[in-house]
Image 1 (tube, one colour):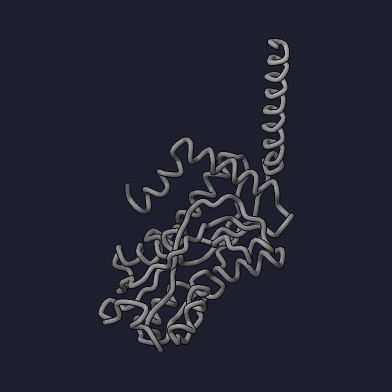
Image 2: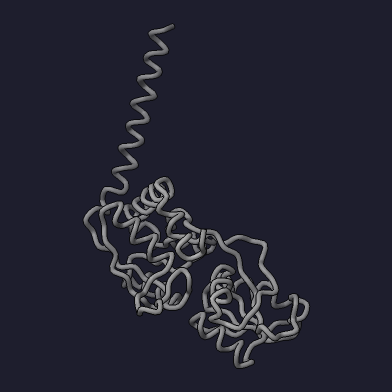
Length: 255
């Protein structure tokens, strides 16, 4: 019996070592490479230009930290969300990290790395608006960013609330529509709009938050960059274990 147990333990050890070796082999191909990554232009606090003119944000810091940890580099292309997705499909960038929500529809076309953040959609109106709920928006015009989960949420509830949905390419355009009265509400990722409101960058208030959580992930075209996906997953795990991940979030959201 002891001999049998010993043999089982040895077999399990070999299996574990083999699994670890396979995992390492999956991301080893990323070492030493430079990946062209598309991102958004104005999606604070995930990607934006700060007061010093430096392009930064949660996405930028996390991916740069993962790259440093795993031994590869990133060539950031600041294109805008929809332009980044178009560039990915055209083979002009190798990945997109732009607060991109992982959805079933997108998973049919893209390979996603493990989610690094979860969000929901916030519905914001002008600070002096009398609207206090979705019911108050019935028959109104709203605005959302093209190709985002915010626009999907707007489209989903549009029939019930008789909404006219307008589309723009950037978050800043959405806030301009609200400020000018061209739209009565905008649909934006909740942490993003809350970040802008808290810092006094936009004169808005959130009147509704969607129930569904939207996990953010790094996207690559299906089957094209398996080593990058594996490297991001391993790097993210390390950042979460050594405290770097929490430190990055605290830099933008506070302790």
